[in-house]
Image 1: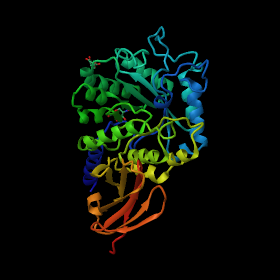
Image 2 (image 1 turned 180 degrees about the horizontal axis):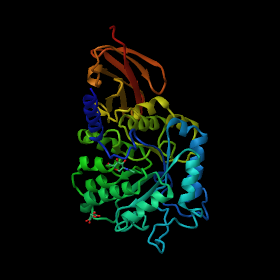
Image 3 (image 1 turned 90 degrees about the horizontal axis):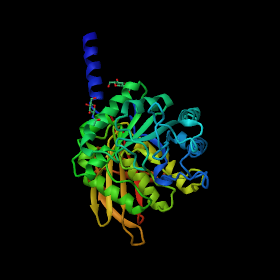
Image 4 (image 1 turned 60 degrees about the vertical axis):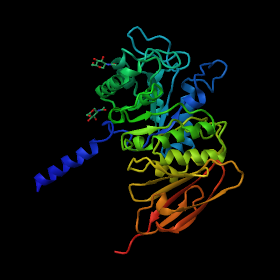
Length: 410
Ligand SMILES: *[C@@H]1O[C@H](CO)[C@@H](O)[C@H](O)[C@H]1NC(C)=O
Ligand SMILES: *[C@@H]1O[C@H](CO)[C@@H](O)[C@H](O)[C@H]1NC(C)=O
């Protein structure tokens, strides 16, 4: 009996350790905030003290996350992107924060973020310089990993500018080891496959998933609907490869949420939220939480949509249908619910009436599903897999439905 139990324990731990970087982190897609898309490399703190890459920005965002419900909804990481560092390493060869913009230093900032019950993320670059021209980590991986750990950093995004792409399959795992050696669990975000794609090298996603918790596959998101659609296109085109490595501890990262910024309409914002949810994507907002309007905040705080994103299976949804400007994406959750996103790329003014046999939208259960709409929280009705479901989808918008299989009689 004990032997059998031991066998079982070994088996279970084997199954669990097959996927993903083994640091206990990102068992569901990480959620939080990141500076890049919205605040870029604005270092002009003299003239724009509220909008520059400096400690005030990150403290402000931490405050908003706690006080405006984002933390309660699951948003946890406050992430510094590029342009935080001083142009020179210190006399001991360590990275140091720009003294004018981060006068208290990163350690103090980490303490502040932790005191608010959140986590701090930071950025470095695998090459000789960061994309913004700050000191790179090539030849300094160990000392930089130690520095981040000493500061109390919880997440690291390692970019790949000014680097030899061919060395990344060895170099990124070197950083994984260096982070591990610090003893501090640090969620590791890799840009490695994106740089390989750009160099027409097929990424080795098994190796990437072993060494990174999340990774960027595709170009940086910009503040436009067109950019959101391009990313979705890439995920559809590569979905079999990408879905195969999406699991607890390891997630594809289609880049930041731009909800509440300058370009997306409310419908488009719902569409990005629904798509990132069903893709099991990291939910890293890049927006100004101090001025975001209520309709966008409500979208970002949609607990039901977040729950699908945080589904413990870690599975990525897939596109199962594409016709007349409508796409159907679907996934089955760990608890056998069926999530469906109807995405419209149409621009012809009126909602599109679309019909689909539920089986074609991924339904497998023999019992009928009770559906609710995750943006209106209204019932949509009961459908078996042979039934035809009819939905109306707004132009440039989505419907996101969740079907719960009815309990079958015992
Ligand atoms: C990775 O680490 C190994 C062992 O220390 C070293 O030989 C190799 O040069 C490193 N590669 C890169 C690209 O950093
Ligand atoms: C380091 O790696 C080992 C083995 O994969 C793992 O058990 C441990 O949790 C890791 N530690 C950290 C701090 O990431």
